[in-house]
Image (cartoon, rainbow, N blue to C red; front, side):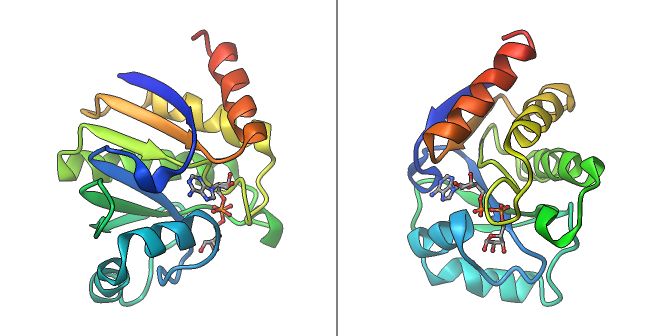
Length: 168
Ligand code: AR6
């Protein structure tokens, strides 16, 4: 698997699937969730409501169309909310593992991830980056390319350090 780091906006990525850092309700929100729903258009929310009437538990993932974005699918995953006391590292690891599992079900060869839980949910940045890189590298999958698409320079820098520390 190729693992790439990009500083930029996940909504413009030409990949099979973009991962959304959603919440349990799966009805949109702020941060990257808001950006994905705006860029993809109302088809994403319609499909979230239809497929996930009760939302999705923390650590688990679902999927919808990517609507008007260049990607084919959005994989919606619910990160743990550090600020609300959800601090079990296994939950954040599950987000990456379960997203790759959904990507395999869909047959997605390329997947773009944001820094799950590292924004409004408040997960400490270096740990979020280290977990993301380690779990993606160690999860068996047919996905051939993972792009971490990092929105700001500090987040990009944290992922760069995590990649170096993991031997890249
Ligand atoms: N492309 C890539 N990354 C982005 C973009 C973008 N367009 N916009 C923001 N980010 P967050 P969370 C980065 O808060 O911490 C929402 O309200 C951002 O800079 O989006 O998992 C949901 O509905 C940060 O590094 O997700 C949930 O309620 C990273 O994406 C809650 O926030 C994640 O920040 C989820 O919080």
